[in-house]
Figure 1 (cartoon, rainbow, N blue to C red):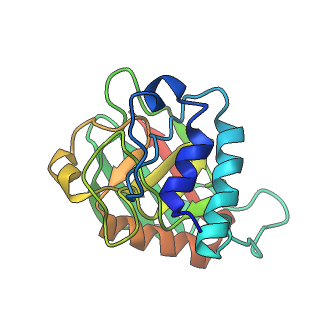
Figure 2: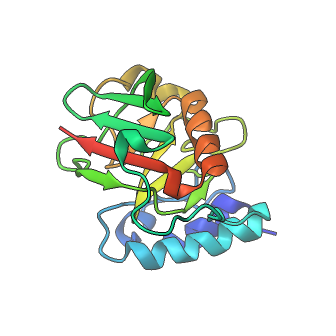
Length: 206
C-alpha cells in the first residue's frame, strides 16, 4: 500500500499542478502539497483526502456526534469546551466549563493568507496525522508536520506544527490555519473527540 503522504500527493497534484511539476515525488511523510484552505475546490480535495486518510489509518476522518442537542445547544462560554483565538495577540484561550484553563501561543495566517473570523462549532472532520510541504520541518512522531487537526470550516483547522515552527508561535506565520504546539493540539483534539462537536465552540477574532 502506498504511504499516506504518497497517496495524498496523487490526489492533490491536479489542484496544485504548477507546484507539482517542480516537485520530485518521494515516499517521505512530507511529499504532499500544502492543503490550501482558500482553494475554491477545497471540499472536493477534502473528500478525497478523507478517503485516503481512512484507508491509511483505518479510522474515520469524522467523529461520531451522539451528543447533538435538540434546539440551539451551547454557545461560547456556556459550552463545556470553548477556544477563543485572538489574531492580534496570537494567543488561544481555552475555557473548560466556563473557566479559563489555559493560554497557548498560536500562529494564524500570514499576510495574504489571513485566518478569517469564526464563531461556530467545529465541523466534525478530525485527523491525527497530516503532512504538509508548504511549511517544512519534518515529521512529528510519525504523524506528519500538521498533527492532531480539528477542522473548523472547509480547510481551516486548528492543528499542531513541527518543531521548526515552534519559534514562530506567537506570530502570524501559517497559510490560513491556526497552528499550536503539538502537545496542545493533542489535548484539544482529544477534548473534541470526548465531548463531541456540539459541546465545543471555536471563536476566532482580531
